[in-house]
Length: 152
View 1 (tube, rainbow, N blue to C red):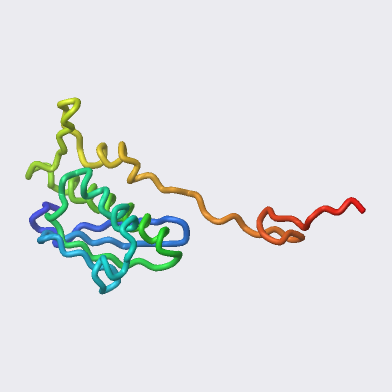
View 2 (cartoon, helix red, strand yellow; view 1 turned 60 degrees about the vertical axis):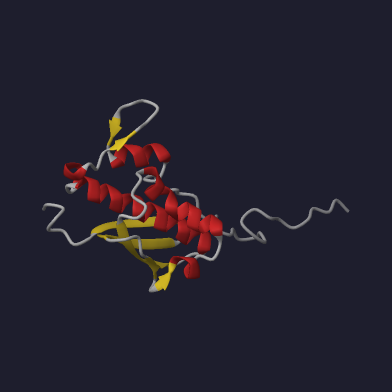
């Protein structure tokens, strides 16, 4: 399928208990999360910076309209899930025909051209962060917290 005939590019991201479905469409940079603006849904600046990193890595900030549906977990997990979904959608764009329109990224310090997949993998955006909350064990107060030991 050529990039011209494809209406949108899709990526799924996961982090902790959160799952994000990301749809990229050619546009002017409009960003909606669950039907709301990005700044309304993620009020913290750090969360918005995490989300914007994959787009900054490949210099595609204002080339796409991004629509995200995210559920589960908290704000931090959802931001990480959206970041991974955007990175996967950018790889989908690059491999579906973005290369014909200059989709490879030039790395200035080395002078070699990299694909979106290579560049985003170097930045760590395509790697699933497997850390999650440890389960509570029986006989304990939390996962590792025990009752205070009393000698006498």
